Image (cartoon, rainbow, N blue to C red; front, side, top):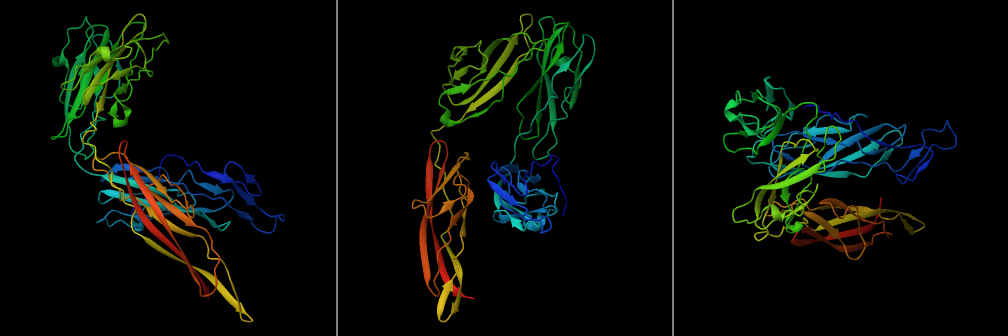
Length: 463
């Protein structure tokens, strides 16, 4: 067992004793007599954090720092595995130490791929208060992922002086050894340098000696022996008094099928060190096979954030340069990939199995007259994490129950709770109610439904 703590400080919200907080819709009461004890606090709430996706073998860090606590109390945090993938030997004992007042975070290392569902409950021993469990889903993937190149960021240099290029930030998700390939992607018109002038171009650290003022663009590609990374581009700025502006073509990625036939380009992060007004110039560098798209497909090449109309599925590469009135920047490169929709398959909804939940109301008798307490509120766990998408698309979830007899905590979560309100009980009488709960799972184009039956039975019982 090991202990891991997040470096991020918690952001707990505290419920002040003796007051009502409209922000958290909760109230606290210390009582009128300062010697009568700590009082009570309601509204304590657990926050297990957002869902995560990690690669098998990496440590998963969990953080309950957004939980709402009672001010002046003694909180503890309890993390529990609600479900693990088939074949996993993970249990609560594999979580790093937690339970002390400061141990809002915990961690574990997954042993197989799949979805791990965990819940967090916050308990305050001072006020004898406990939160409803909050859940988080950790999706663990496997497979040989491509390495990631990192050329170390832009540099400033001087004519005739060695400039060091550091690719030590490159990595492989499966921790395979890397092979480095540096090249010179662009030089000023006054330079005679080529890629052959890069020293140690096969090592993690390379170097260049600029031969004139201007912008030098270097690229780094790394290989794990099976796959190559996308190139990482860095610039060496060798200039006089006026600093060269910096182009930023934004983040690339995969264009969702529902986004239509437009790629949205974004150069708003470009800047000039002296604050000069910039002129933008976008260009298309590479288009997929069969595409006839050109620079004319860019809505406005001089705009900071134009659109590009694609015509063929595949990867498009774009270049952005900016001008400060004196000098042009080095180009910045961005890639956007358009995936096809013709082979898109609908996701597969899996709402789990039918459920039978029994609740008892405590009964007592006096003079042959039975009196019974209500059957308390009952909770059914709705678990749709076994749903899947054949194409690996991101899925949305929606739980519904048409009669309104159940209250679903978070209908758009894969894992949530359905609540059946307290019911009147009679001694020896079973009262049942059955509800049909529907789960809709959708990607951006198609959807699938699965339903389950949830039956609640209330019985008055002599205790």
